[in-house]
Length: 391
Ligand SMILES: Cc1ncc(COP(=O)(O)O)c(C=O)c1O
Image (cartoon, rainbow, N blue to C red; front, side, top):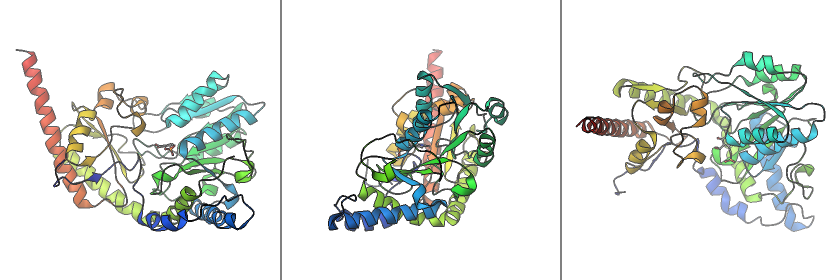
């Protein structure tokens, strides 16, 4: 890459850069190397770090500090909640999740099916909207847990979690939401959301990788995934990642200003989509008409291979994605887009752009120009190939 190429990061749903507040706090936090479980002086400072982070996180999501359990990230949180409910329910053997969940929910649910649970996958339509009729019809007194994400990582669609949790509770079922992509993007109040469990991941909200947390509503039974010492009030064994949790707490404090940031980001995203639709032919926005988190845009650019587009944009300095980061390098089209009813070709022609707090309108302008060039070149190459095929 030449020095003149800008490094523009539009893949914030994969991970976010570490924010300046966290970078500033890091050296001081790293001094607290003691074990937070130690009774002596060495444990005091790390214990305080955990306490402050727990308070900050609880305040940011409208919960009580005792309702927070620190984990190694979103995948562990999802596994712990779902497997924990499976282990603790004696009379209920039915589980549900949407067809567009992150693999850490979907694969855990499929694992439960192998272990004998009845698992229903709730369909989602082309607009990214969940089939509520299917959901209502399948919910029964045998349903143990429903797990539906708050916001989708690929299209940004927001699901009606409050309404769905209410319906689950009417049948005596528990409700979990994977809030990994929602935290920091929409204002959150877990009490109002009415869920029993929620999952979060620090590296999606401008902190470091390897930490996350669970919201476990007061009074809900919680069976640990990791048995060990008495950490996290016996809900998650293992010496806490004090440095990571301290950073997570600092980033969570910043999340307070979500409203204004989301409004600005939403305007930039909408403006970007408008220009792309008017300046590039045969483009559609997946779930563009549905409620979405403000930073995400999932495009289908007809006839242009997503992976090729991604690589061409990378050469120009723009980091975007074709779907979930964990499946990049995998030639299979995104299971989420297929589950929404996009054809294989449409899913293969998809590009995900996810903006962040540091995104500027100049970066967006530069990106649109780069995208125009890339799409035009790839389409003309394709039509040349098509002509040659007939020779
Ligand atoms: C919706 C969603 N849930 C869970 C995860 C997993 O989080 P982590 O990377 O912390 O394990 C991700 C990460 O991509 C995600 O987007």
